[in-house]
Image 1: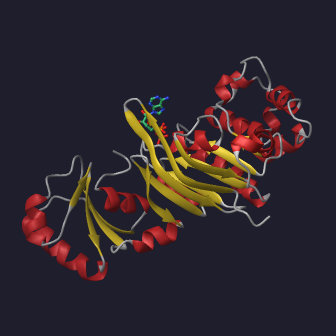
Image 2: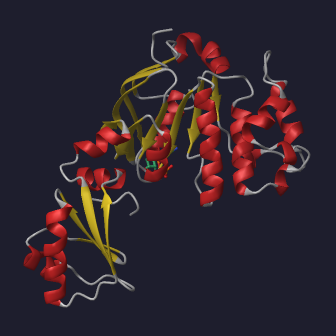
Image 3: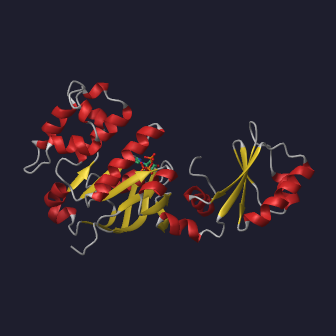
Length: 306
Ligand SMILES: Nc1ncnc2c1ncn2[C@@H]1O[C@H](COP(=O)(O)OP(=O)(O)OP(=O)(O)O)[C@@H](O)[C@H]1O
């Protein structure tokens, strides 16, 4: 049982117009929630699909639970769970019927009652799939991925498009999967999600892993632990002249300026004085700790949100 849940070396995949995955190495330990974080087009889904055996890599090695797709594909398939888009379900099927039906595909399936408990859809068991909210449909998709009691579960952007409350309730399901001893590999482009859920993560950009580690270690690697934000009423003005006056870089984002700093206690008074003297019409000032968003910005010069 000491082999990792997942071991990947030199994984590559090119499509006619783009190299989607350009040499990825990953190792995921058993029992971990591991995240692939990155902006749209970073190569997360293509990486996941190769690991799931759905896309054939151009090069590289993939071991899933110590097995390879070429030699032990059938065994891998019986031990992993893949979250399907629940929208591909027939509309006039109830939650209970869908879980019962998927259970018949496997020799050993978890009971429908157990799965309903896990994703907290008991009160929706007899509702038609088409009548579920987005968050409930995603939770059903998670339950369907768990029908065969998999050791390793793959979730591709499980919370995209959900409101904050539905997102949190889905996070609870992922945490319960972990508490049951499963390994989870998920993709996301939400840094709060990666920070809240993942034991470790790999940040991807342009088909490569640009940083990997625990969320805390990735943030700690930044030379800049804090960010002072000045918010404006409406779009923030161009900070170039102010940055020169302050003698420090100032980033503009929508309705705020961000001033990364090693020492907020020293920066803050000087910043406010300079802002006052320059007549900067800011509304509020706020000091926050650096986040994974700042790690991405630092590594790529771009924002995850762009
Ligand atoms: N079947 C395909 N044919 C051609 N190009 C593809 C195909 N699948 C993905 N790509 C391209 O490969 C790159 C990586 O896409 P991928 O879907 O893996 O990224 P992603 O990080 O999952 O992004 P998203 O969050 O948008 O899903 C993109 O440029 C995409 O357009």
